[in-house]
Every structure is written in structure tokens, then in C-alpha cells.
Length: 77
Image (tube, rainbow, N blue to C red; front, side, top):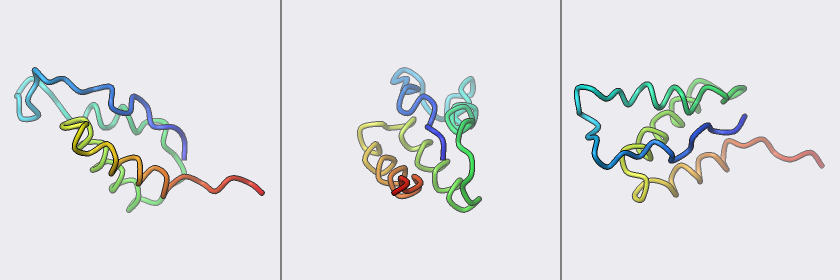
């Protein structure tokens, strides 16, 4: 799994996630662009976690970090 792009850098307190001019899916897609080599199910879990962090970083950052650690490849021995 490659590095997440822009992790937590898209928090705009002045923009509501349901604002018609804002597209949360675009930010999620941008963050996940460099992520490769994970199962579709794990990619979906990651998409959900990234979306939550963009919407509310303080409340969801630890969940994303735990998931990234879980999905990260094991270092070679």
C-alpha cells in the first residue's frame, strides 16, 4: 500500500459536506490515488475512513491511523 495523499489536509470548517458546491468524493479519490495493491474490500474501508477524516478530522483521525497500520505491508525481515 502506498502513502495516503493529503491525509487530513482537506478539512475546510467553512464548507459543509452537504454543500452543493463541494464534492467529498473528489477529495477522497484524490487522497486514495497513490494507494495500490489492496483488496477491494479494504479499499472501501479506507475510502470510508478517509471521508470521515475529511468531514471531521478530530473525531476520526485515530480510526484512519489504525486502519492504515492494519493495511500496511509488513516490513521485510
